[in-house]
Amino acid sequence: MMKNEPRVTDYMSEEVRSIHREATLKEAGKLLQRYRIGALLVDDGKRYVGIITDSDLSRKAVAHGLDPSTTLVKECMSKTIISIEDDEPLIEAVKLMKNKGIRHLAVTKDNTIIGILSVSDLLRYYSGVE
Image (tube, rainbow, N blue to C red; front, side):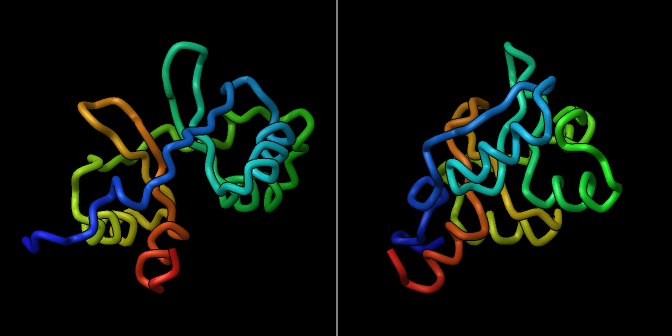
């Protein structure tokens, strides 16, 4: 492994935004738009229980004609939160996203979520734009 190899921690977003599982898809959409992000972690008031992304909103809700004002986040969220440790090389995040077919990873340190890494974070690195 190269000494100066970029790490997940160098490019992740430290602001972890979340929404309650009983919130509506409309509320989730508003938060995604307000914070200009593509994913929210979903909680039950005590712990994270899933993740909902802009893709979930379009593929699961809009495509099936669900009403965003009445459909709950828990009905469209992914129950599995796929994560990577903060000190992993960035290339491992790329491989994991590719293998799982996802665009967002929870970033963990000692099994605690401390950030989110998205495809746009990876593009920032690989395009050389800081």
